[in-house]
Image 1 (cartoon, rainbow, N blue to C red):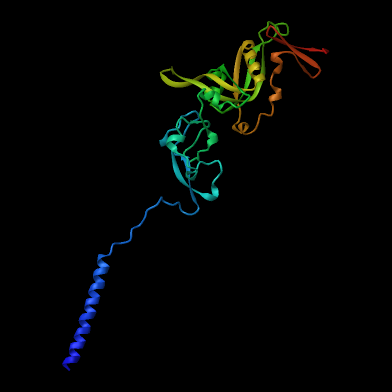
Image 2 (image 1 turned 90 degrees about the vertical axis):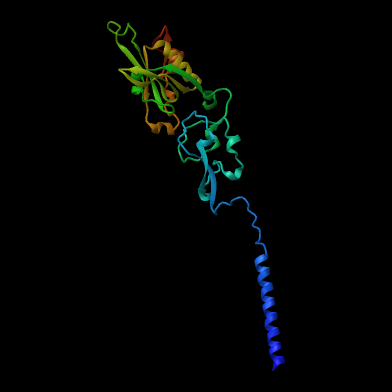
Length: 274
């Protein structure tokens, strides 16, 4: 009996020793190291560069005016700037100017950014176009509500030929330019009746070379040039009535079997010329 008890006791002591060794190994072993990598984007999500506030046209972009935003990959356009493209906000955005107005939450596209050391106006001017300035006032520019990127008609008012009117005090009005884009409005602050108001004094228009000549001649011939504001819908289509511009102001032009001549600021049609 004594031998059996000794054997049982020995087995119990051995099992206890084994359990103690195993417990010691478990508590002393170091936890596995986790290697942290760059944060991965959720499936179907891409980081897109967007404006965090409204950015008017001509504004130099700052790093705090844009940020990366999650965007569904199904709605990604090739024109968007994505984080995967390696775009660096600090260096790649330095000196960039908004070529068109950007609004909060709108994705930034390279087509809306410009960099130019020749001045902003030359950078936004399309190839082959000319920027021509003309003086305006509130009563000749839709009450001062014309803004950059609006479309306007240019209307010329002048005294009629004294030979065709009684007393020569009648006026002739003609739309000389149709559906042209306003590039900029020169605005200054003036004090009127004790209130500070914004009044545009000069409008810069985007014109073709022939239209630039028409406006230059009209500035010399006219008593007044008026800008007529057109619907915003006209900015979505190319001007369809440019052929109606008053090209006869810059020389003789045959029209409907007659030739319109300009001499000493007087416009007249002569028929039967060949």
